[in-house]
Length: 305
View 1 (tube, rainbow, N blue to C red):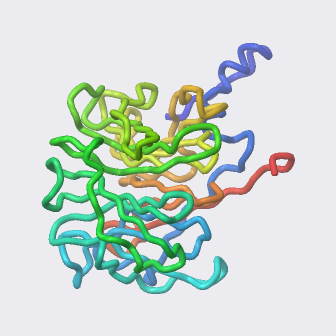
View 2: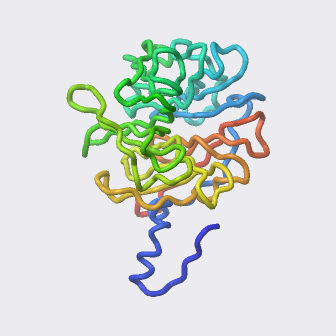
C-alpha cells in the first residue's frame, strides 16, 4: 500500500516527503506505463537481465532460448540509432559456457562487462565474472571472462552493478547470500583499490531487510539506485528505488517504484546511461514468453535540466 501524506506544516511535510525524494520525483516525472520490447527481442522462452550501453545502441540480455551453449546465455541486440527498432539478439559466444550466464552489466565507459555465472573456476554457486574489450563499438570483441575472486564466496554472488564518478573510487554493487546478512539475499558494495583488486565487500545496511534484495542498478551520478525485492508489502518481487543527496551519504528508505510494478513478478531493473529509461523483466500479462523484457521512460522536470 502506498503511504498517503497529509500537510501538517512545513517542517512535518519536509520529513514526510522523504519517500517522495526516494522516487526522485523532484527532478523527474513519474515512470511511464511499461511497454513490452516485442518479438524482435523477446521470445516464447525467457528473456531477462537487460543492460543497455551508454550510447543506447546495444542491449545485452540473458535468455534460455534454443541454440545457446548452456542453460542461460548472454545475447546482444543492436540498433543503428536510438530511433530505430532493435535487431534480433545474437549469442555473445565468448561470454558463455555450458552453465548459466545471467545479469550482464556494463561499465560506464563500456570497456568492461560484469555478469553472474556458475561455470567451473568459481568459488561456488553463482559468482561474478568480468570481461574486457578494447573496441567499445564491437559487441563481439570481448576477452575471455575471469572471476573476481576477491569478492566471490561459496554461495550465490550475482546481479553486479558498476558505478564510477569523479568523487570516489569505482564501486561494484551486487547481491549475495553470504553469512552475516540481514536476509536471504542482501546488497553489498566493494571498491576498486589502487592495486587493481577489489576491497572486502560491505553490506549496504540501509537497503537490506530479512527478505531479498537483488540486482541493483545505479544512476550515472550515483544518487539513485533501483533493485528488486520481495519485502512487504510486495506479494512477490517488485522494483524498488532509493536515493541520496551525495555519493558519500547513506541511501534513503526504499519505496516501490510508481507506475511500473504489477501483480506478477517484476525484477532485474537496469537504468540507461542517462537515467531516463528503465529496463526490467516481468512475467505479467501481455508478454510473449515465461519472462519478457519491458521498458519504461521518464523525463526531467523543467528547471532540472
